[in-house]
Amino acid sequence: MAQRLLTIIISLLSIQALLLVDANPAWGAEDWLDERQQAWPHWQLPAPLPRPRQHQDLIYPEWLRGEWMVESTDLADQSRLEHPARFHALHPLIDGKADVVGDRRFNARAIGEALLGEQLLSVEQAPEQVNRQLAHLSDDRTLETTVIGRRQTSTDQRPFVSDELVLQILHGNGPPRISRIETLSRYSLCADDINLICAEQWQARYPGPGAQSSNQALNTSHYELRLTRQQDQPAGADPRVDPSNGTGIANGDDH
Image 1 (cartoon, helix red, strand yellow):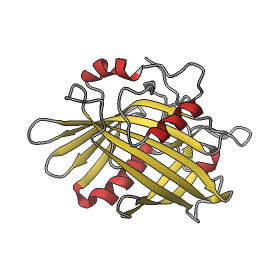
Image 2 (cartoon, helix red, strand yellow):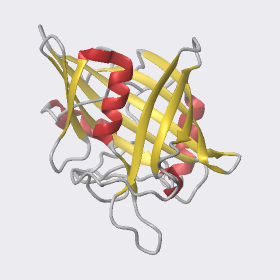
Image 3 (cartoon, rainbow, N blue to C red):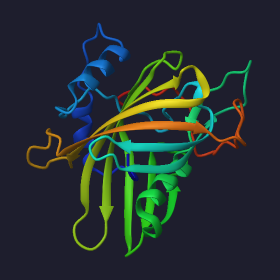
């Protein structure tokens, strides 16, 4: 999980080639994501995660729309983290359907406050670029993040699965600290209850581009999540859309 917040830098041009390794053309996203999850914790880069376009967000199923309280459990030590999360319709509903996206600024701030407390001062969403964020931290530090690779299953599929790779840069005293974080998430309704979602996340942290042995994961984590719909946000509620969110399904391309 954690605070993933940034901007594209010149070195992204060099790592783009690593991200564009083609998966088996006979496979769909479901096949590749299932294979990737089974390979955890022995993940390494490069991985065939296409780079999303500027306005290309991760699109979630309709049943994730609304406001939730998330309880995340680290299965290694049973430590827990609680924070709110918000998923909203990108456009006005048409025939009861709309693309559903995460409120990245709201969700990043909620997770950041749960993890860092008063160390997190603010979170900014890059204008017109849904995949970039900037967090301002105490002691004159800033944390930049951008999604540099993404793959997802169809929103009609259950469970819904996605995999995102982000580049994270921490600025402060001394040289910037650069790393990459991959998070594969699997969501499903708990016993078909639209007010309760069960999820798992598998995560790996890699060194920054160009670092020695940068293809190997430095450490891995496994989380169990439980999302409970907030009672003042009934199923079908449509929170205000953040205009900084863009459009487009989230399988990405190489542009």
